[in-house]
Length: 128
Image (tube, one colour):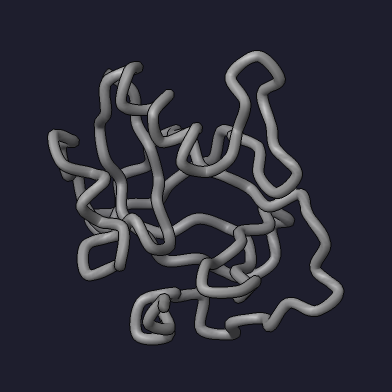
């Protein structure tokens, strides 16, 4: 099992949360960074500025690889035109700290909308 921090549509209440079936919810938390609206989905930038809210899960290696494919990451290449998987430090709501994987945006941000509150939920548009 490995830890995974999710901040967007995969979160509880998000449009793609069903993809987390079988994962173990650890708790709510936050990481340093900023979040943007790219289209109907968010993008995380781990630049140390601001704070992004999300959730920490434990997932199997197989589940993590399946989620990589969903995020557009080619297993042989390690990143896509939009995301790469990186290690982040998560501060849980309990105050504990955990190291986890997260998907960081490496694509174009020129037309992206910064979400100042650092929380995708409550903003997430309904995908059509």
